[in-house]
Image (cartoon, rainbow, N blue to C red; front, side, top):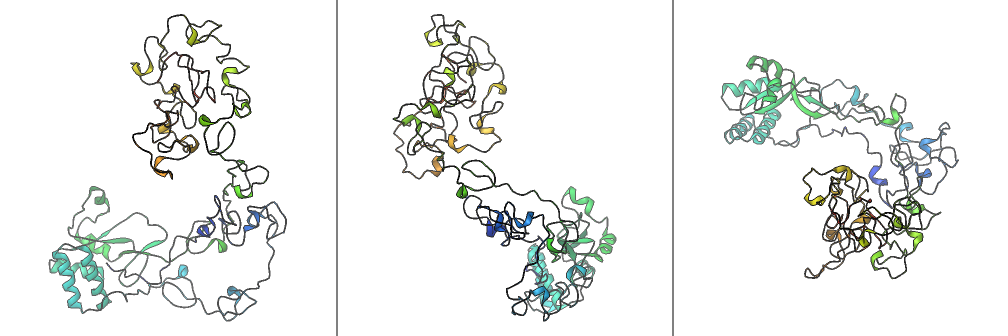
Length: 501
């Protein structure tokens, strides 16, 4: 159906505030993400962002104009008036400014929010036909049960008969048995940007009109909104209309309609401002492009030598302990197996027999199989009859216990995702820019994401890990702390020998 509402309706969704204009550039980008009076980076408030410029109001550094505690200093206007084109004054102060015109009734002297008159409905887009031809359009649409054709015919009929009401139309439908019913339903409260309007442009009608091919409610939930009988429906149609836009702007300060935040009579509400965090040094207050105290860090570089172009498993340099973080004490400079606080494989007890002086792989006692799920002996966690103990499952994405990586609530750490096409870390196969690898060639069975497009875990979806050729995890299945590889023990020591999830 053609849009027969007023052609001068304006969106009631509030002002855009310059969001799209300032949300580009590096990272969150823009020169005014945190400046100006309009929230997200109005053109007047870029002084406080990025490089730490001075406030446009008081001239001091350390804050922007929107957060300035000093009274607002009036500034001399040097541009052109948008109303008369003369320099030296704003459009609001223009002496030749034309009188205000209401967007609802098109009369002068008041705004749409104050208007009590009927709306001037613009039906220029509706075809000019005679009442008889319009009625034939309604009848033809009812025969083929096409409500769009029926509504189009109704608009043509209303244009040729401007005084027509919903009651008159419903009476004609019943008298001629057209097969179309106009039902006035009592909908819940509408959004403040919308209201119900009848054929003559009268707003704020209580009931909403709907066109149906059956007088009964189509769904049980509609029964409570439906009129009880024909008499009640005719009474409702006298105060019914179809939903239209009010044409009012929404205030971003008080959330009411009819004015903007600049002219809001209420006290300015405190809005939580977006924190700008540098992705290089993780400090607040600046972006990556403005990060000066610290050199730019390549998060996909080799964890051993710090050079880009290869991963730690392919690094030819000797292990650099300065880049090694102990998984036990959190300090740099040693593996967890060599931790001075104990607990590693360098001097602790055997995980098979419990005696000191040797490791599990050198143990002469019969190898024990301990389940990592229930801690029972004689079976592995794969064969465990007990339900999976999620308290012992470690996520490969966030390293926390209690859930698997596939159900991790935190954002995916792309530095742990390995492409199954090129073998590099940091992207999926679907995002790989390298040529497609030969499917007959074998992939490097490295720990994180070898044949898994999700990128987390080779044979272990639960997070306990298996033998990892890259060293992230235990290279010794008898000793969960491992004895070789860069990174020591990725997963926590479980006390089980030769067991895997």
